[in-house]
Image (cartoon, rainbow, N blue to C red; front, side, top):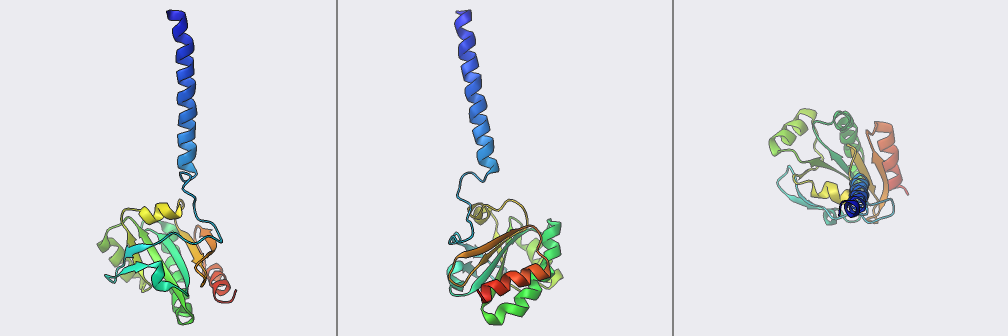
Length: 175
């Protein structure tokens, strides 16, 4: 009986290692959830904003949309906020919408942050991080540029500077 146990234990151990490796690789790669790519239609958004209204992507149909995922604790997110605000002011009359999606923070923290920085583009709450998961956002900040036809034109992971942001929006406005 002792000799038969050893091969069974080895097989079980190998299966555990294989399943563990699969679980880790799936988690690291976004769970195989099909992270949206350039050219894809972005996943739906239906989130409450600082303004008290529920915002959806359908609300902005026919407009270029910059979707920025951020958090107050993220240094890079904080650094790029003035550039996002400046570009919102510059392009809003040309049908460009900037949506800031805060990831999992409470209303008071987000409201105080937005007021302190003078941010007045729509800020939405993703309190349960459902939209973050739908978009496969891993590094913060991540920004999706959606063209007027409703397709993702490009995705930028990491901090955006004013020049890069301006160039990306120009491409949305003048394809």
